[in-house]
Amino acid sequence: MKISYHGHSAVKIETNGKTILIDPFITGNSLSDLSVETESPDYIILTHGHSDHVGDTVELAKKKDALVISMVELATYLSWQGVKTHGMNLGGSFEFPFGKVKLTQAFHSTGLETGEQDILYLGMPAGVILEIEGKTIYHAGDTALFSDMKLIGERHNIDLAFLPIGDNFTMGPEDAAYAAKLINAKTVVPIHYNTFPVIKQDPHKFVEMLEQGNGKVMEVGESIEF
Image (cartoon, rainbow, N blue to C red; front, side, top):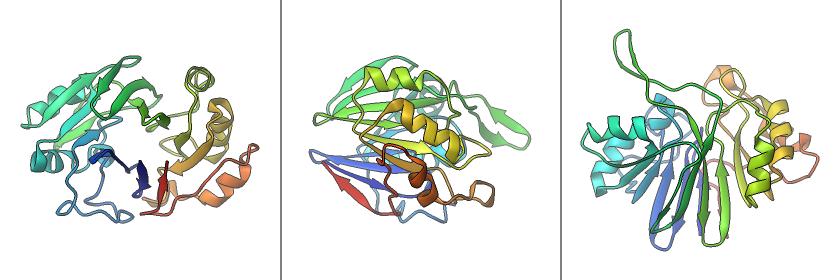
């Protein structure tokens, strides 16, 4: 299994000949190294309905009839755009051909601008736990720090965690460092930073904050293999 980071919150997982994209914000993302023209995922997983996470989902999904996995309200909206979807809800899990997906709570907001002065509410935001090839991956999505992250860590032996550090819209580095302590993952990777001036952060300073010494800064395009 190969897991790579592609700027903002975009993560790609390649496993058993299938490609999974999480939060594929490519167009308009100056940090992304991906191209909508060349990417052809089999599955897309969305944490919530903000445009910098839904990103290029509709165009990407239609290329290969990819299955989009998300909260049920967001899945329903995307199905109206002609996309194949699988709706879920917080606390629920489902076994897909590539592995198991479970949605966890995230403390954030969600909504998509669909026109001038029009925002469509698209259900609760979520974090995602994936169990693939005997490994557990936690993508926290956009979230504030919350105490039940400790419960998530206790319930799941997390091998790799992606945590937002950008501040302003999500946890900042200090809260994210505390979150890393709560979830107790083997490796923690910072995400959701430097895309916009208001979320400018130094990921290396975040890694230095981690008492467990388990942080890893993934450069855009860099991968981890399990």
